Length: 116
Image (cartoon, rainbow, N blue to C red; front, top):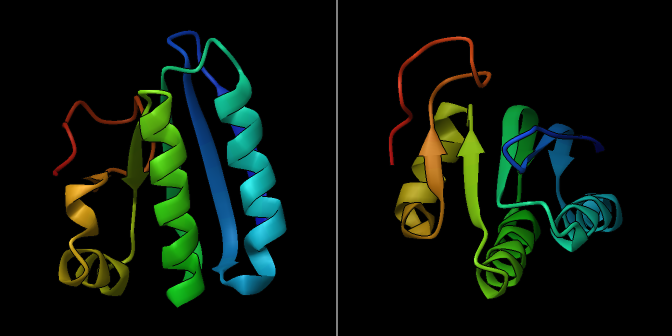
């Protein structure tokens, strides 16, 4: 997994993920979101999931840990551009209650709001 981070002027950290969100991705993924949440200017966190090929149960566990850490800081987490199968998994596991899920690929490209 590769993670790149960008923080916009509004304090939203966008983590663009590439590859598989599985046990082997744990260290890099955790380091990226922990670093983002540690910055005092961060008010929101968006995970761009458009290039994530696969998410296993350990990946779901990592998302749950992220949710708890972000909630403790009162930071909302959005999952953007999830592939259809992963969206089904999010619904089946009720993760859609924990995260905002958006369809759009990139912020600012279209004016449509995402879905929850």
